[in-house]
Length: 324
Image 1 (cartoon, rainbow, N blue to C red):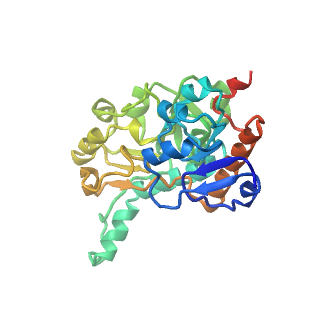
Image 2: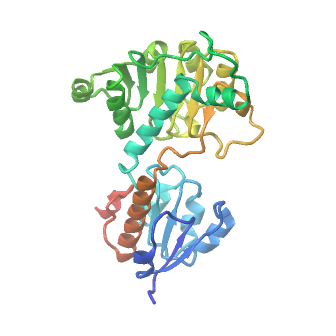
């Protein structure tokens, strides 16, 4: 039996046979993530950790283990991990970029269309027996074709959303860390300030990692700049939006609607006032949840884990500077 021990914080949508041939594998089988105290104890005795966004991998946890050789996260984001602490101990941190781009962009577009055309409301209207006849003004929504789309963060997913918007003849605005003339020429997008994007867009979609600088980036001030007919989409991170400000904007009609796949906190509390709103769609962080994508993410995470155990360079490494 292998000398390596690994702990996986949740069941994965893939076969673990390859990993089991290489290491002693323990999987947390419960639906809820392992409590921090459990994770803290587990990490003390393992060589490798395969974790998810729901796991808090902080400095205390990282420094609790003398044996930990690699942290492999099954996610494109990694704001739950103290990268500096891992780097200080020369522990590579793996992640799974690129693979979820199309799945997330598809889901973003699904949320946009569903919110614009009030599909969830229409389904509920029908299911509760309210449909009595065809009515000219029943459940009027927003036209997508020819509308203005504002993309906040033109990374891989933002670009994929822009490609989809081209098929709807949309005017596409974007704001990002920098202007990219090549992208403007190939995608037909226009670089503008956040303020102008909010003022002119019919749909605003967020595609950026959560950082200290953009925490609650969308608050009362930003919602006030948006059109009263505008729809906000978020498949990035919940903390980018102030949930109290979102509730005020939706309940007062400052904006027409929103569709979010991420919340702050996650899961959203069952007593959250956001859950009372008919003009808000909330899904449980499933933008990347196609079978093909999740399986590939799991396999990438396993490959990173095995590479770290072997002492090889991770294919997808957050803190690759440890190899220099």
